[in-house]
Length: 208
Length: 270
Image 1: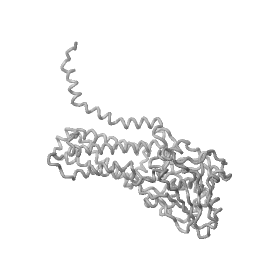
Image 2: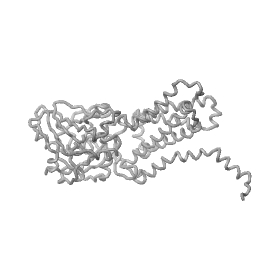
Image 3: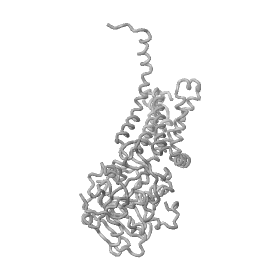
Image 4: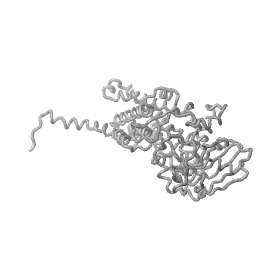
């Protein structure tokens, strides 16, 4: 026998159904929590700060690549996962911010004399920072209100993800001494995604 | 195997980095690019038997049986700072023989000015040597000026912590030049040649703007991608307990080596 629910309570499943995707945000943060836990338990090896910092950067780059891949995915396979662009884009921004914080705070202990030289003289750092700066307006306008207010300019603004990804890709490439089997697949994926924009559209598909 | 060793000079008052970190955090690209790769991917490498050649501009070319060398009473312990060009550092208790002792046996020709070192090529046992993407030409090569090679600090290491070198640390023998960045410490050396000119070196060939021939530890000359003023100290086991310390000029060995570079512009000769 089931008790009759009041209207207010019966609303909850509907709300959950519409917004269940919000649980993916905490799910996406699991790698960060896991890295902190490992770091605190000696599981990040002999140079935990470096591994932590690099891992956060790699996760940022991974989410950025997934975010960028969703449009070509729909175009070439018909699988429409575009609704996950906000999720993956925001996670990329979140990890890039943590990556910066780890570099500034954990690695350099907020030593601004060193950081200032890094940020003004080292193209490796400047490229990474620029990528993150380009993502800031995207993160800030990644809501329905901004989309409504900005109208067509919103789409134009969010194309900034392409230069951001290129800068992040070069920064990622430079974070290794040489090209190698770890970095190459990510760089190849980025190149493929970017180039796919220039491929001719199929007659049946409708372009993004 | 355990080595017969005795305390040597220059060890100072240093606390060695834990054995686990010294043997599991390595740059040895012959066995892979990751810091943990050398420990896991070097287990099929056979460091013995091994012959070390000292040739080139010498009056008495030498072929040394390394198994014999491992029993030499001349092996001594040297606890040295190790500063990697990637801005991290360790303290390692090496066991070895001063390079000068071996070079003197070969009797360098008066025209010799430089020493070239060459590592081994064994793609079947060294998976990193089949990694085509890196652009590294094998063998790994390094070099020193003859006076640097003859400096009493320069060591041909045969062991760490009183034991023969683990494969991942450069078995059966490697160079240790404690006032230079770690990449000068070429591992698994097969050939040493005395020359009358500066030899090419692996990292300088790959990125001449980032890695100079001298590669002296110098907190005032930054790497293009990061500052060399400070270094992460290896050995902290927790993320928030890790420390940074100031990097010392010539890695703290200025008293022994500063004279070698008197009058040189160390910004140019980095």
